[in-house]
Structure formats: structure tokens, C-alpha cells
Length: 302
Image (tube, rainbow, N blue to C red; front, side, top):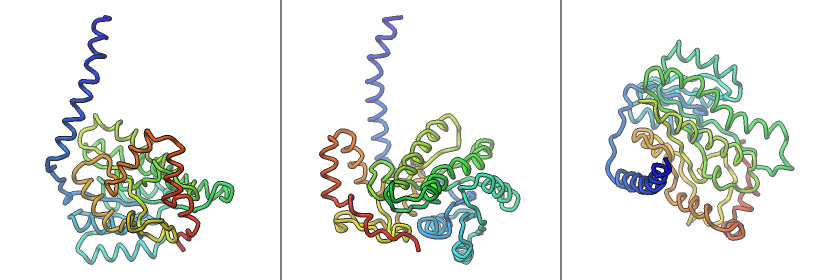
């Protein structure tokens, strides 16, 4: 038994190296893209911002039906009408993902009126842009309920049917702030870190479930009204992402069955640096980049 254990310990790093090399080589090869013509896509927070562009991009790339969830009927209706005019069937439903009972109720309505959801996009999010001591308790709870717990309820509502059909995809629009937090957005950073852990666990849990996959998108600051007023110190070096670009790359990642997508790709370097750099050095980088004060002019969605 001791010899067997010793052999396993010796083989483990060899196997790890093999899988790393194999994965690296496969990433260089053109991957086969998933056909979206039979997919029914549901997007939370689908009335505006990244959600609106995601809805348009899924429709553009051939999704059979697009379903929008949100809390503002005016935005949902405008987006649904725009997509319908493009030739794709589109429905919208008022739903607050923070409300568990409402999520389950509306999920049942969606199944009865539209059909089975095969791609779930958890995009709904809020940010209050304040420090801990300046934050209202109810506002802090609201961020956690929408940004994190909402994913639990929507995934529990739609994943069982995907597993039955052996066909489906769960998508999370996360943020690079889940791995590199900034002051002044403590509610958002905390909720997104929880959301990332949720998706990492879910992705691993579905490895043995044929036909069902996950994609987590971690974009840098995106130019939407939700982060209106946020300023980056060196915008030429770190320009804000356009929401339509985030949408295009997200849909492409879903079609390629990519588990994690960092936008832009340079965010990989940020995560790697953070893993081994001393805290003092990280603090100086934050000061130099201006992330300490980037939320000082934050206004948010009006």
C-alpha cells in the first residue's frame, strides 16, 4: 500500500503537467461552435445595459426565442420590441430575482407560455457605490439578494429541466472586482466574489452531467449607466469596455463551451500578480492606478 501511495504521489505532478499542456494546446485550436437555432435564452436584467446587448446578440446569432426578466417594464418592453422587429421571438416578464417566490412563480409561467429555458443568463446586478460605514443596511442586503442569492433561485428554477433534457447552459455575468476589490463598492465586490464561488462550485458539480455547461464572464469596468461617474486614472491604458463587445464575447464563449472568460485578456495578469505579490506592493499598485479614488465621483444609474 505504501509503494502504491508513493507511486500516486509521484504521478500526480506528472499528470497535472500533462493536463496543463493538453489544455494549452487545445486552446490554440479552433473550437467547434454551438448552434443556437434551437435555444431558448432567458436573460435577467435584460432590459438595459449589458443585458440588453446580450439579448440582441443572442437574437443576432440565431437563438430561437429570447426571454427578458427585469424590474422596469418600460426598458423590457422597448428591448423586446426591438428584438421582435429583427425577426426573433421575444417575451418579457416582470421579475425581481431577489424575491425567491416570485422567481419560482415566473419560472413556471415561462415554461407554460414560452417553453423550456435552455440557456440561463444571470446578468441582473446592482451597485450602491459607498463605503461600509456610509452604506444603508437595506441597500447592503439588496446587493447580496440580487447579485448573489438571485442566482441561487434562478438556477434552482431552471437547471433541473436542463439536467432532464441533458441540454442546457448557465451563464453568469460577473466582474473582475470579484477577484480584485476596490474601495467604495464594498457591497458589489462582496456579492460578486460570492457569485464567483457559486459558479466555480456549480461548474465543477456539472462536470459529470452530459450536455449541461457553465460560462462565467469577468469583465473589467464596462461603460454602462450602472457605473456612471466611475473614473479610471489611465483610460488610455485601461479603457472601459463597450457593453456590445462584452455581449459578443459572452455569446461566443457560450457557443465555444468556455467555462471562464476574462475581459480583456490582460485581466489574467492581474489575477496572477495578486496570487504572489506582497500586500504592500498591491496597495502601492492600487494607489498608483487610482482605484482607491475611482468611486469618488460615482453617480450610478439615475
